[in-house]
Length: 487
Image (cartoon, rainbow, N blue to C red; front, side):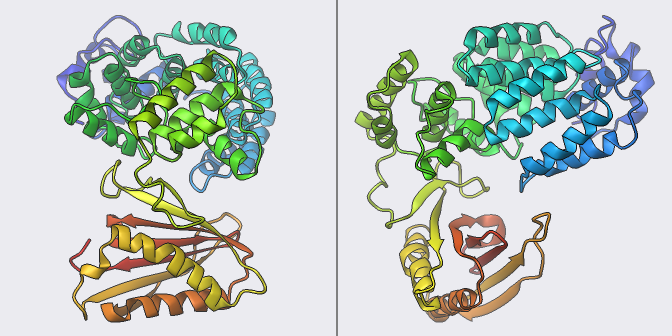
């Protein structure tokens, strides 16, 4: 955005009561250009005025924190991040970022008791008000089922009317969202002057939708371009435009959390995959996880209803009633009988054809000694890829002889799990398509040294068409199919 009059004449972020143009703007204007967002301006001013940018750190602390943040980018490595943040806060116990993020690494792993212990220590050592830590404590205590204490931490976080960073505002909004405090989310996001940030806007937009103010929510959600939230925000935009409600366990509520950014939903999936009871450790957030999985159509209402059968408690009863209503309305069951054996359909997180239309299929493939490469290729191709292509890609519509390309990228993951090597592009004609694909898979399995793959097939218009990804422990093999003038 350009730095317009509404930004220049807003109350100064430093809290002086004067207009920004006549207070801190002259001091900091050289740091900004026309592409700087209001949220970035506010964060810069508040952090500078609080002396955060001027603080002297012990040698190496900033570098360790930056490396730790990088470790949390995809592909996320919480163990590496945890080690780096631990080293940083040992060098300088006043480094709030290191405490907050080390706790976050344990949160990603699902060790909530350790999370609370670390986060409390971080709050005690912080040289300034740790509002991010307050909101985090509210989220973590909710996971432990201690909602009264959680509400007390939310109250502490709301006392901060001038949060110093966008991450702080988002964390407070997340804590409020757990308790459906919609109006407070709108008020806090607006008062922060950071509501033009994509992540803050996402929570503000959903809060407005929950308050029945869809007209105000529409432009806000439509502008959300954050990687984690963009797809579900666009789904909500479609709901508003078609005057329909999103899929929700709880009637007409618009769920806040999405699978990409809600660790309890991942704990839930991991527990089911390992044959464990997902309610065993943290039942309070397991209900929240089910809401996320149903909203994004990763799990079916009937499946989740069977899972909570016989479980007692007010939250379980409310969840049970919501799931029954979805089952009776037939939500999520239309494709249940059409998936091949062993295949799971999940929402695709890429920018495909739309949040409600595109699915990614997943399947685990175990490479056994008694199998031939031809056996494994047949399992993947005939039992997995071909049914997906026939359902979503309409390859049979092509005339015989039409050209296509298969870009085969065989990546070897190094110690930092970065992808290496260049693609091999195999041009062909449509009547050769399946034979070429089968041969490429046979060659792969003939030389593979993985014992198990997670197979994924999806569509991505940005890459030209269907993608088959075979994710092993040490390798990632991508088959990217491009058909001219089709995608």
